[in-house]
Length: 497
Image (spheres, rainbow, N blue to C red):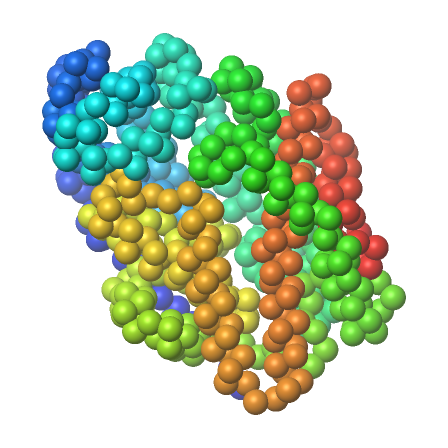
């Protein structure tokens, strides 16, 4: 039977695909060259876009894209260095310094997208009709122009851009570093955030309970910081939303995802109208399966009775996921293999590391990188399958170039959830026990509740916080009350909070 020793020697990513090291001359050269190019770009094009013919505008966009590629490479490298050890002061300083230098550099071509959005539709349409080179960038032009109604004066946009490094981004950093530095006592051990959260899916109730209590106690000891971060970020967003005349706190996010407010409102309403038939019903059944009238809050992610809970070695997880992808498409599996063979994945759960999971697309000239905290659970296999779906999608979209390879969440999450589903079906197909197959299906239902119901609940919590923040600063107790109201509504009466 696999043990915790099976989780040793997990792969770490190789960031030398970007630069040899944080202090390499290539970084300083890229910063210096980008600064020179941006200043030259501003002199050539600022105030002149309306007068450019289509082919000349296309050339300007290509130059803009080339500069963005280099700056994106620098930014991605700094972000990944930071994510692999947020608690490391050297990493944090490097990330901040690179961010500040990129912010300074990009202030010189902030005008470009602002000026494109000032072109009237007939002007731009004429340029597109008369330039095949410009038509290549038609999707990018379409997407950035959705911001036109909310664009502020050049001076205000400049101020918002330059101050972002010391406002919103700094508060994000404070939160991330505070969380990364926390240690959660459990018996004689002090666990990281990722490790303690992993215990909430333990098959032993005392571990789940003691871990949940430790999480609550440790976080409450830092409640003033978290409350301040929440209040400042909500106020900051509220002010900018007001200046831009966004109708709702969620509107800017919907706009970035290229989806209408009405569509999202319909989705939210539909999920909420089905809380009772979905999550309430499921957790009532789960409580019964576990022999309880109600689930304690630390039981929500508990394994079901009879479920296999042995740790799954990394090699086995790799084989399972790549095999599932191969059964659907050998070409997809071949792309996926590169993540494992070429150092594109950072898997171990270690002190200081970002406690979540992501696939960072970086830039087309490099490749995506996956970060996760693999601890041998079935959910970790699903996380690997999910992030690999993102990664393969990002590799395929890279050929569109820096400006057009990015995708809104509405499309990006399709690839990742699809990857999860491929892997789940492969696991289900190989299981011969009817009992285990039923448990696996129940687990998939639970995962989908986390994907759909929990995400809508998080969204509702944030919206309520933003709405109440308009009236004044929120206390820790009030933020907690909003959270508990949302939890009760979304998860139902079968869980004791």
